[in-house]
Image 1 (cartoon, protein in one colour):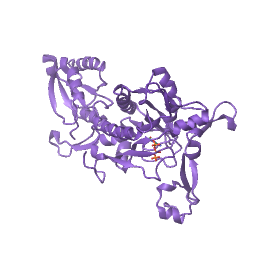
Image 2 (spheres, rainbow, N blue to C red):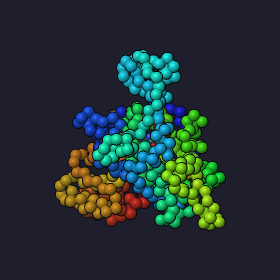
Image 3 (cartoon, rainbow, N blue to C red):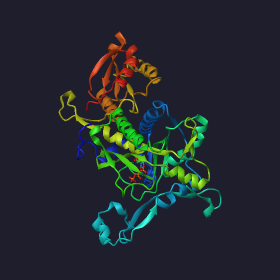
Image 4 (tube, rainbow, N blue to C red):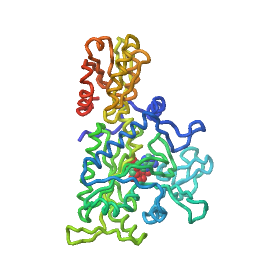
Length: 457
Ligand code: ATP
């Protein structure tokens, strides 16, 4: 394991990430022309590609590479009894205080203890209200009547959609314990404090996998899933010295949890949770049995029809939080001093090629003399297999910088020699090294480079 860092040492700041994200079309503020909507963000052309690829990598890891995990896409709107059974109506609260003077609102567990004890606002020194419990679930109404019978919630986690379907999936897909169900989808929380860009938002996406196991084997599976989730981030090329485990203490454990570990990432603002691995016991399925009156027991046909309520090991990652992590992790600034100018810097996003929004950009050295047409032909061919961009605007050095800043791992440059001998220049983002490759071999070469990619910087 890489030695863990105490303090953030990278080149990213939240300001730089936010501004690059906007400038290059990764992420925009929601409803910006109206002054923005707190806690909501829009993913632009590069952002949606990055988010989809992060989701795709997780989905492949969970469903394609594991024979015993299947997928699900459950509805956001669920029967309101779900949230009574799950304990969210009663327990999904944050402690809230307001400043009577400046009207600022704080999570009581996030301000210094002395301020809380003295009821003194950490911002203006004004008097704070008593702490009260604030439920994070968004409530709305379904149907034309706005009465209590029509109340419905936006799901605050995707997990419950999996629990209420687990017997359907056993029956339809003949699953046997141990097995898992994976799901990616939106979740909503009325967060009191939303800051740090897309880190904590009111509308976000989760990638959750619930693994159903026999009681008694839960500790073993819990450790197994901790190992697998840690290894996964290594495969994505994430800097491993920026990751650490944090075990929940007794006062941090959620109402359903027997044991819980967070994978934390060292963001520019410090160590923060990226993903949780939880032993949720049989709490949720017991509660759904109680509230729905349906039998949620598993019948073990290989074992004399033994019946039990399975234990659940959950791995719960934020997809949108992973987007922020990958942006921070990839961000670099480097002095390049190519053209003999010592002050030449470049901003580069060192995405793993399998996550980069654009895999390859095809650039004609000049627009004239048939180079543009040749480059467009090459792009057309590559497009079948890769996210391929085409750019003919401006000096070639400037075009490379633009692609570096978008995190494009490979550039293909078409020049006069290409017309003569059918070779092109392949430029690597990280090293800026350039080699000549016959254009007929490009696709195979790119595939090999993606497969063998190792992050060096
Ligand atoms: P916190 O204590 O920071 O509010 P949590 O412990 O309640 O978070 P979980 O309920 O375990 O978080 O959610 C699982 C994952 O979902 C988190 O690790 C995080 O990546 C993501 N997540 C949770 N809340 C948000 C949010 N408001 N915005 C973005 N991602 C979130």
